[in-house]
Image (cartoon, rainbow, N blue to C red):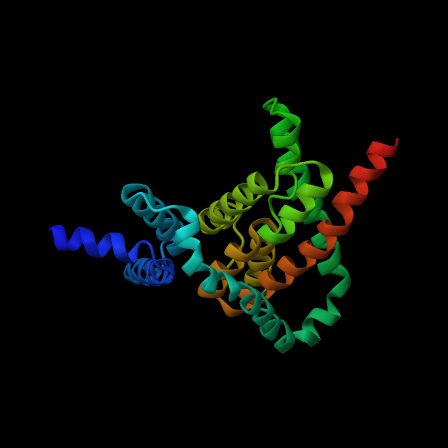
Length: 244
């Protein structure tokens, strides 16, 4: 036991710890999820966050020490998001034919995503900074943090809200689509994926890719459209409101 403690103290202080712990925990969570037939509540991202958080707390490991190794995986998020463009490129002819409808759906989705966060926060009487941090919750976290900073929110809190929005969407989408009777047909998968990417950004798109190729492609498209729309529209809208 003393040797195990010494080994833990040594590993937890090196950059290798964060990288190794993240890979091991995620792969284990992914295996469990696969054995459970990809059940939404067994989302590997969710359980990786839970297990790693508990392990860091139990071991007294500072987040900075953990991230020194995990940043290598964090760096790969950029290429991973860019890679979402390949499924869209394969469907470029269909996307081009339906560009107007997809753009209209993205605009409506942006209003619903940002407006719902603001409305819920306002109804609960949340402080102004928290309320503004909720507005960009459905945009991928790095962009959402930039938006929050521009409109007077708290970037770190916005990142938390973005992760929660992604996880909630990825876990609840199957049940919501069942209640709404959105069929598992070619058109249905497009609608499911686009809605999930709109509301739950990258985490939702990753979930959609696991379930259906078309759903994943259109979730990636929705993710990109929300980044562009909300990054321009939300700061501009708040600037106009402030000016008036």
